[in-house]
Image 1 (cartoon, rainbow, N blue to C red):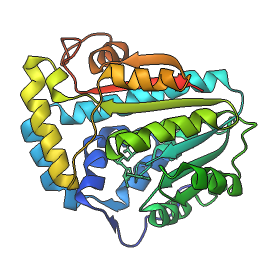
Image 2 (cartoon, rainbow, N blue to C red):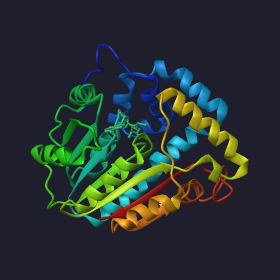
Image 3 (cartoon, protein in one colour):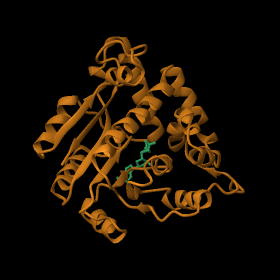
Length: 284
Ligand SMILES: C[S@@+](CC[C@H](N)C(=O)[O-])C[C@H]1O[C@@H](n2cnc3c(N)ncnc32)[C@H](O)[C@@H]1O
């Protein structure tokens, strides 16, 4: 049930606004999602969005591609588990949970969203919009501090007897290599069936020359917005790390492959390394 819009919109930072603005098309396909984004004031992010679009004219399409592809992979994993829980690390203000609850309400036991910020405000928006948020647990926590986080998740109703789909969207490039490696190690060691879907950014040097300079400029503009360097990985870095922790890689896709799968042809990403973003999914 969607209630009245909130009285005043929730104003968010430029970087938090970025993906919401770029992927706004996607939030029109669910009633609840649409109501949610209508309650957020993304005006602070307008200049960052503009500078992104100036550097790379397909900024919107890449944000949408990432989100659509993650939804597609999620659908595949959801088919494998009659019941499951979802754990979103670095959830930010993305209303993905609302979409997942609309699509998989019978299968989802609980969705845990974890972020270091904005969780209280997001919970308030969810409560006002959908009322019953029993299946949604929002946790303010450092997602790389994994032992205390797993303990907190258990307190909030996480059960290792139920399969869990972990989503790390737009998250890996925020955390150090060491922390990423420890996170994978701890997830691998944790009890229960786990599927993980994550995206990462490849070094601009590895991007095809047709898009290399644009990639470099986009990464620099993102770093300027964030105020710190972002972490990039070659495909072999990521696959090597996952295999080192005995993960079973199920999918590994370049932007070009994602565009082909989603739209049936390559219009923007012609070369295998035309894009700077890749998505991998695996099981522990
Ligand atoms: C680019 S946003 C992605 C938001 C959302 N997942 C999406 O794809 O639209 C990255 C998010 O990761 C969060 N984050 C970064 N480091 C974190 C950490 N160590 N623990 C939890 N959240 C973190 C940031 O606060 C931010 O909300």
